[in-house]
Length: 175
Image (cartoon, rainbow, N blue to C red):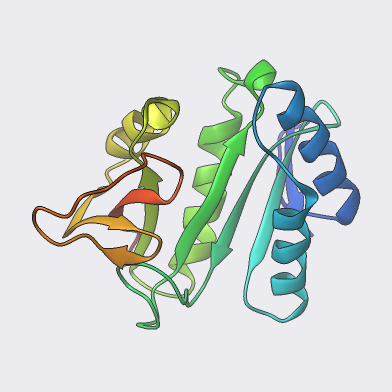
């Protein structure tokens, strides 16, 4: 299905070959990427749990995002709120509006399920541009504090690693 098309950027459903492409391109960027996450997302699509989107930039897969209409994880787990998960635009395609259009499309889909959407953003510096973008888009912290491996960190917890599992959940009204 095509969700957006302005000839330059097309937002469509993800297919398996996209996962292979992104795994290869993310490794070239120095990211620790495997096909496993894309296979998991496509399995969740098949099981009706997820909508996985890809942004083609002049016909080349350049970014992706996933919407879980009733997410099982995080600050609003199993409460009927959609979660935006695993948003990325390949570095060589950034600053072309791809991320904004992907997020616009993901939020539009989320708004079909609930009035609020949420996401978790990593706390290390590789997430800096995403953190800024989410704030500019109107996302605010949900108030539950920092999470690690899908559990709330209690006051004065010792966290030994600042990896991708250390996140802050943000939410936004979408309707």
